[in-house]
Image (cartoon, rainbow, N blue to C red; front, side, top):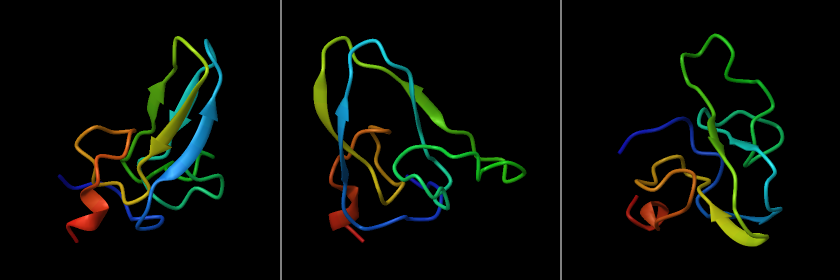
Amino acid sequence: MGGGRAARKSPYILAAEAGRQYWWCACGPSGTQPLCDGSHRGSGAMPKPFSVAEDSELRLCGCKRSGAKPVCDGSHTLA
C-alpha cells in the first residue's frame, strides 16, 4: 500500500465541517498537512478530495500508506 512521502508516523486530527470540500495531501511535502497546498504539482501524485455529511473529528493518515485514504487505518504502526 504505497503512497507519497510520509509526513509523519501518526495520524492528524481534523475537525471537519459538514458540506465543506477538503483535499488530503497524497504526496507528503505539503506545508499544510494533512491537507494539500499544491506541492504535488509535477510529481504525478494527486490529492484525494473528501467531505463529510456531519461535523466530524477525523484521524487523517500522515504516513501516506493507509488502505483507507484519507483516513488512518493504523498502517504507520506496521513500518
